[in-house]
Length: 251
Ligand SMILES: CC(C)(COP(=O)(O)OP(=O)(O)OC[C@H]1O[C@@H](n2cnc3c(N)ncnc32)[C@H](O)[C@@H]1OP(=O)(O)O)[C@@H](O)C(=O)NCCC(=O)NCCS
Image (cartoon, rainbow, N blue to C red):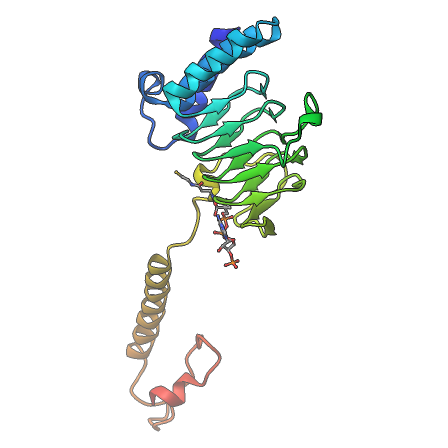
């Protein structure tokens, strides 16, 4: 079971990081993967009551990876932590399946006080949430399924399913390239890949224009010089492209 989970996490990294080339590369070079291995062990120890041992393994993981995950944090399947350095995941944080965190993310508490020991202080991420680099999510609220948190956002209240929020303080922005209802495909960096290239779009418009003009020149060349009676009055072109009186302009 543990091995299957780790294998799924390697595959999730391969699927979501355009830079990852092989499983062995993920195993050797991905701190996010190493952090999960440390966390599985630390969490296992913590749940059996070996709290200090759990904390110590978590601390070793932090030294090795730069990612700090409290051993009590609950982490779902196929979490991908890209780059990783500076990620902090607090004691009562929960993360659903298929989430992605970039470096510098904090799932933290707000002004934790001594009396709050043992209470929920950290956020809960739903499934397929993407959290951009440096985002701070602070407090015991939920971030809904498929939500996207922009790089550098500071989120201090609940985020609805599918919402994108950016900025400190975080505010919703319209979702670009939303792929209909249901679970969207993973977008590296949270960005849709079908953003139209303005240069390609301009070239495509020019090609359409040239094709239309060629057709009109060919139509003009195939006509007699004047009208049927030899007068200079030409027939209008069959399909003026924009409704203007092209005949007059070309005459
Ligand atoms: C939040 C995010 C997912 C939005 O992507 P998107 O849907 O393509 O959104 P757009 O680029 O169309 O931006 C929508 C609006 O939000 C603003 N915006 C986008 N990301 C922002 C951010 N991180 N902080 C502040 N504003 C942001 C844009 O300027 C735009 O504002 P406007 O409508 O006033 O012009 C993306 O910008 C992001 O932050 N991804 C995380 C990337 C990351 O962490 N990379 C690390 C790789 S190592």
